[in-house]
Image 1 (cartoon, each protein chain N blue to C red):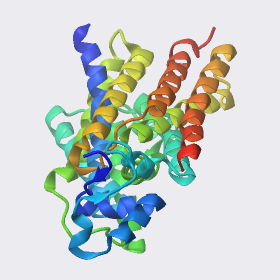
Image 2: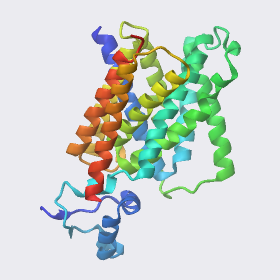
Image 3: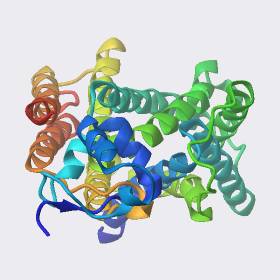
Image 4: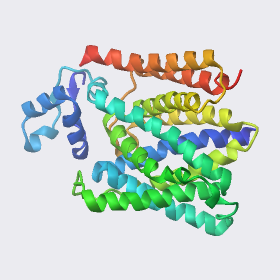
Length: 203
Length: 144
């Protein structure tokens, strides 16, 4: 079936349209209504089209990069809190203040929902996974691994999970096969992170 | 030893899992609402653990500087940004950009606060990370 692309499920389409002009062109060619869900000729081979759709534009790129900067600030605030109170407290406080702030922002801005369809219940469990992360991290940090070992192994876990999640389109997010340049970029970033983690301390 | 190594790797897996779930929720709602649920559900979960384990208010948490209490608002932005990005650029690129941002800002904060460090390793590490980001971006321009 080379050169033929089955359109993704309905709830994935807005993303494809918003991030990729080529797919948008194909979408309009196919017409609206039932016809857009049928297999249609496409000049991309089967495994390629998703990469175009998911190539980061500068704003996405900047957003994710800035989010990384926020983690460093959070490590500073929560880590300082943990020096004075218990470890659980240093996770409980940001959850509490974050919930209050989020509620206020939702009430004031009332952002529109992307879909009228309800999300599956399991999609609400990200906070449980986040809470467990705190426990697993603190257990590992208080062992022989220390902060550097915990960070490095955590990076490995995150990378492996994200590659697998992308390749499979886990939990209903768009599927995309990681490309050679993804692995190359990833290898360099991980190498740089490991240098900083293990050699960046005091000489 | 195997146990703690597994624990650290699992922590990384859980971070990815959390971002994937929040990203899925944002697909049906929006990034801000997804961040709200992440914090609200997380608050209930951490509170339950505190009730079971106790010791939540041990130590002298009120002696901490005021800015140490600002983790919540930062976390709200972080989760919202992650949920927004993962649906658009995928889990792997989101993860690597967040890692890159974390590492580089970490070095900047260390330098700003005068934390001792190996300057050579810092330069090499940051250069490698910037190089990795450039590879992802540069290759993209040809296909776009």
